[in-house]
Amino acid sequence: MEVFASLALALAVGLIIGLERGFAIRDIPADSHILGVRAFVLIGLMGGVCAELAAALGGVLFAVALMVLAALMVSAHYLETQRDQDLDITPLIAALVTFLLGGLVTRPGMAGVAAAGAVITAGVLNLRGFFRTGINALTPKEVEAGLWLLLISVVALPILPDHGYGPWNALNPHRIWWMVVLIASMSFAGYFAVRVAGARRGLMLTGLLAGLVSSTALTMTFARLARTETRLADLLAAGILVACGTMFLRVLVEVSAVHPALLPDLVPAVLVMAAITYAAAAWHWARQSESSAVVLPEASANPLQLRTALQFGGLLALIMLAAAAANEWLGDAGIYMLAAISGINDVDAITLSVANLARNGLSDIVAANAIALAAAVNTIVKGGLAVSLGGRVLLTRVLVPLLLAICLGALVLLLTPVLM
Image (cartoon, rainbow, N blue to C red; front, side, top):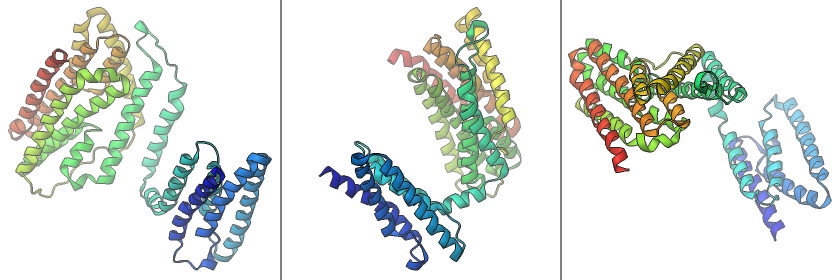
């Protein structure tokens, strides 16, 4: 009975892939193609039968059957190209995959894997237009950026040593580069999110996605617009607040990637700050529901700036060394002082550095307080930039909600250890 069940599933694997193929060629006459629904069903069944025979007669039989099928497919494809000049070999590859999945069904415990493989194969075949459209929509800069991201993550990261160097063993090349990859990946994802959604489709969405790249840059841009476009003050304030709220969530992502044990001490306060910021943004959005025409800036003109990533790595190494020195010489007070100073310019580097220190022995409560302090200082700086560049129109719309978020977040941060 097990053999019958395996062969039935092998046949079903061929049917799943064959149905997609049959739908794709439904308008083509049956005598104008070599691989239809029936062919894929039989190829799946053939894979199952050959695998069962190979289990009894030797594995060479399955390999020979695969080579015979491949030769048959190549010959048929050659004849087809002579007739209609169709050079697409995707159906041939799909046929070979169907044969292999049909054979995989007969292995103990692999039936689910084979069924999933059939569904994935059918899905990939069905996305032909999506892949073609997506590739045509890419720019050379975006392709280059994707390759650089793969280079620094898949190639460079695994070969870096994973142990400390320098004073206090504070500099771990693997961890530093992992953090560089993390920030670069978030910027890359933010760029394409804006690219796909379209920065001009909505100010709130633009602020949300730009917060993954640079909430400070968006704050400065929108604040300058608010000074000249006072009628859009509520909308622009909403965009700034959404970007600032996304920064809080970005901090949690970074901490979870480096030292998840910090999250219980940090999550309540950060979520409170993010919630208040988002609520204020929603309030301003509701006050001016009809948006006037305005050109919204893209979050980034380049999906991945390698020089910027390297500069961030250097900054991160310096802050990690400074954090270790501050902890060694000044204790907790030194960590807090460094967090406050670093937060003026950037919250990512100090967040990753302190989380790494907590991973190596720094108190989780001290680390959570330092990260929250850096985020608060960074938020105050952005609120100050909004008012100085945008004028009094953003004082109550941006700075006051941000200060309220920081105050309530600090209260929650102080109460969290007591409640836990």
